[in-house]
Image 1 (cartoon, helix red, strand yellow):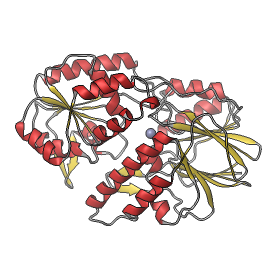
Image 2 (image 1 turned 30 degrees about the vertical axis):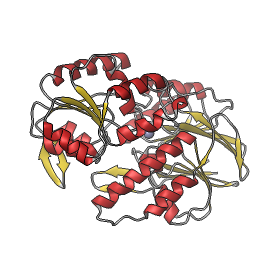
Image 3 (image 1 turned 90 degrees about the horizontal axis):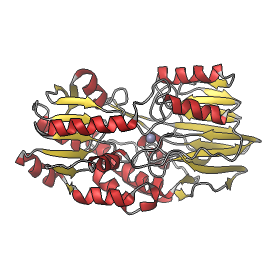
Image 4 (image 1 turned 90 degrees about the vertical axis):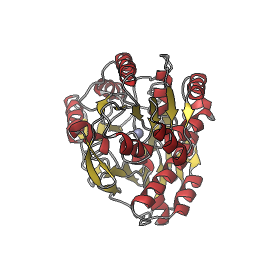
Length: 424
Ligand SMILES: [Zn+2]
């Protein structure tokens, strides 16, 4: 059997791993890497001989290459949970529209590819064995975002677990990962986003965040860039803990995805709380609405996308507010290398309309991760105790350090680069 790392090898982004066995060629995720320089695709984009694609969750770094595959003639089934399918359809279309605008129509695939691949995803529930081309496979709840899964595959007498993105702790929105696997696992392919770092205690982070928003709103508008899926809803729920005299606005994909989640209340914790939080906030619908609110110059809290400042309505807010020292930009999540958000945190500059500009706003980043921290990853690896581990979805140092931990436990360990092939 071979495992081919087409992406996310010693990097975060373009997750795409191929399992090649006597039963066929199977892809685990099919993502893109979004960075300031543009979009990077997996090292395999030809679709010949692929027998099935399993999608762990809806984030673009796990799904964004699906339309390109469709364009190249992907005919095999693509499997995901119903929630992953629903969110993927929204995110792919949004990403296509952003790409079209940024590249003046020069995108490698068409809107019909985006629509066709979204519609064609076959939905499968958690915890049920399925069969295709001689392999057996099953999705487990990964606790990362609504619909997220780890994928278990049995082929050539071996059991493989691809974790996808996982959270081993519960959050205000999500239950923790379901790690009650009903098979011993031979080969574990595990994410390593926080492979060498612990998260601060969640409850402390939540209180610090609320205190800071309370302090900063006295001076001026507070911008809360959030990932559309999961984080925006978690921040909405969190803000409910305090009383606010100012309005809370929800904008862009944060609004769209929240509305989608409200119509699928069985895919996360506390749907009643989310409904209450959303109803008590104001919704911004479109650029006309947004511009008129911005022009009123009122002090308010804005929950909007994108979480790493690489597009979406947040760009419009920053265009207007970047020179205002009374405005605060409070980042609520991980900022990948080469993202606008990472640049803001490291140098107080961002790229706006192809120019690099200074940001005079107050800037602070909070660690509200939807990924397991180092202790969570260690505990999971110990619990599973696989024969072989393949580390992916982490920057160089994070992936390597998690690899060292596994090697110490006498597990056969690989920390492959993108493009590498592992023979099992
Ligand atoms: Zn993710």
